[in-house]
Image (cartoon, rainbow, N blue to C red; front, side):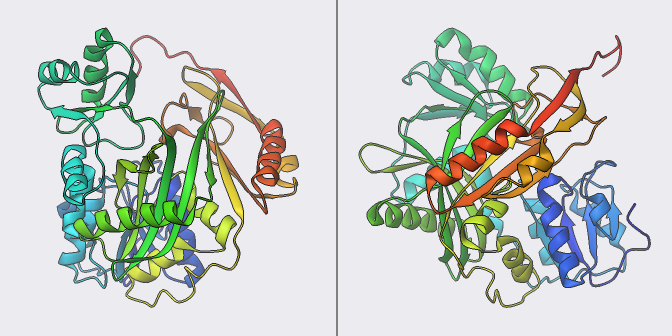
Length: 411
C-alpha cells in the first residue's frame, strides 16, 4: 500500500484506474513522488503511487482538505472525464505550472459539443437532447434510423445503445439515463462511413503529434482492433485542421485531445465525440509502438512546466494496432487463469501484452471500455505484418473465465 505521510512537491494524479498506471510509471522513471486520488480502495494504480487519497476525483474541496499544507509540484489527469473540472480547480488553487482549461468542459456535454462543431464550420448531423425522456423519444422519432442513444455527459461507452426500430427508443433512453449524472439523454443519427479516431498533442494551438486510427469491431472477447491508418494528404490535412479548430474553440492550446469521427464518402468528417484529454484503451502504447513518441511523458512534462523536449519527436513510422481483450461471458465471471501469454509475447511484431486482471478477480462482460481485462499491441512495416502478429498472438492469449453466482440479496 502507498505510504503516509503525503510527500511534498509530488505529482498529484487524479485517478488510479488501469489507464492511469503509465502516469505513475513515468513519474517513477523521473524519480518524482506521486499522490494518487481515487474513491475506490482497490484502485488498480494505487500500488504504483507513493501515497493515496481515497477521495472522489470530482470532489476538489475534499482533496484540498486532505492535502493540508502539502503543495503538489503539478496536477495531472488521465484517460477519464470525471476529474477534468477538478484538474482545473486545483490547478488554479495551487497556481500549478499547467492549468487545465475551463472552456474544455464543453466537450463533455454532447449537446454543447454539437454547437461547437457547428460554430467551427464542421459538417454536423441530426441529433436531439433533453432531460425529459418523453421529449427525447418524441423528437428522435423524426430522425432517420438507426440512431445512437447515449447519456449526454457519459464516457467509456456506458449507457450507449444502437436503436434500429422506433419501439426500442424508450428502453434505450431509460438505459442511457442510468449513466447520466444530469439525467440528460442525446439521440444522434448514425453516420455512415469509415469509423476513425484522431489523437493530437498540441503546443501553442498547433498539433505537434497527430495520429489517425481506424476502429474495427470484431466478435468474441476481443471488442475492437484500433489500427493506425494512412490517408491521402488532403484527408489528413482536413482531419487535423478540423480537430485543431475544435481544440482552439475549447481553449485547448496545449496538451492532448482525441476525437471519434466518421469520414463520409463525400470526404467530409463528422465528429462524433470529443475527449479533451489523453486517450484511453492503451492508445499511448500504440503511439509509442508506431512512432516512438511518448505522449505520457509529454503530458507530465507539460504539467510540471518543463520543455516537451523529444517526447513527441517521431523516431519511426510504422503501422500499429491494439486489441482489447475481455471476458467472453455475457454475465459476471471469475478469472480462473490466462493461457498463452508467454507464447504471445514472443510472437514477432508484438510489442506489448498487458494483463489488467489476475486469477480470482471478478470480471464483467466486455460491453464497455472499462471492462477490458487485457490488451495486445503489435507494430510492423505493413498492415499485413501487424494483422498477422495480432492474429497469431490473439489465438494464443485466452482468458479462462467461469460464471459466478450471486447469492440472493447480495449486490
